[in-house]
Structures are given as structure tokens and as C-alpha cells.
Image (tube, helix red, strand yellow):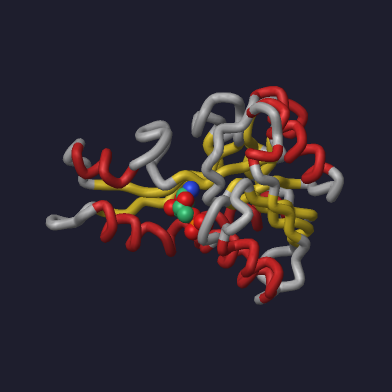
Length: 203
Ligand code: GRF
């Protein structure tokens, strides 16, 4: 499976995909790593692994819609079968997402549909939740709102801060994302006319 990964920063989720692929656990080829941040560390990681990179600075485009169109035109030129948003911190225009329906996923650090958007750890703590987690979902025009593929749950411990929660969650995000990409690469998980199917059965 040809995979393009979009990042905005550290790229630890990207790193997990690269490591899993190298261990032979993921039948994928990461054909491109693209970022809206020219200084994203994850771009260095990709280069160190011989993966093509693309950094497109939003300042280089006249407006948001044109930026998204340009970014996705360039990503599309690599003919990915799947686009993975992994720490990609930009809301994408519905127009560019439509052609990729069922072929673009995102990992989000909350138990969706709770806490779409930012500051998820702080919000879970403020709500007094006892569980937290990460979710992988198919990307639609609704921010962090597309059909869920899988979640991974952790408990919130007394004394947890947003940082300790984020730290404990991150390795679980990595495992969850790798598992979801594996299922998609194996054809076990798939998107069929707007519904996620697993082993041929709608979730
Ligand atoms: C992660 O918590 C991810 O869930 C969120 O951005 C954070 C950084 O991800 N979307 P990464 O280390 O850049 O992969």
C-alpha cells in the first residue's frame, strides 16, 4: 500500500510507522512525507530514511483553499493509496477531501466523539474523566468527525497533568495508528460507500 504521511511537527507517529514498516510489520511503502511547516522535525526523520519530502509553506499561497488544493495536487502526484494525517495541525478544505473519501485517516488524541479539536488532555482532565485515549478515524469535512476505525483507551490517574497524560498516551497512539494502517493495507478494514467495514462487516 502506497502511503503519504502529512505532519506538522515532531513526527513521532510517522516514526512509529517507519519503524513498523522496517520491522516488516506493515506491507506499505511510505512514498511521501509532506508538511505545512518547513521546519517540521519529522521531515528530517523522513529524509534520514530515504523518504521523499515536501514542505509547502502556507505563506506561499494566496488563501487557504488554494493552499489546500496545491498541497493535495502535489501529494496526489505521488499516487498514494492512503493519506495519513499524523500530527497534522491544519483544518483541510472539504473540496480537497472529497476525492479522498475512504482513503485518508487521522489520529486524534481523544476518545472521539469527545474532545474534537485542540487541548484534548486538558479538557478530559477538566471534565473529571477517568478514561482518555486516542482515536483513528476516516477524515471528512467535519473536523475530527469522520467515521471511527479504532480507539485505544488509557485510565486517567490521580495527579495526572496534560503532560503526563499526553506522555502516557503517545505510545498507545503509535500502536493504534500502526494497527489501523496494517488493517487497511491488509484490506481487513475498508471504507465502503461511506461506512467502515472490518472483515467485511460494517462497524
Ligand atoms: C500527537 O498527540 C497526535 O495525536 C496529535 O499531534 C501530536 C503530535 O504527533 N495529532 P506527532 O508526534 O507529530 O506524530
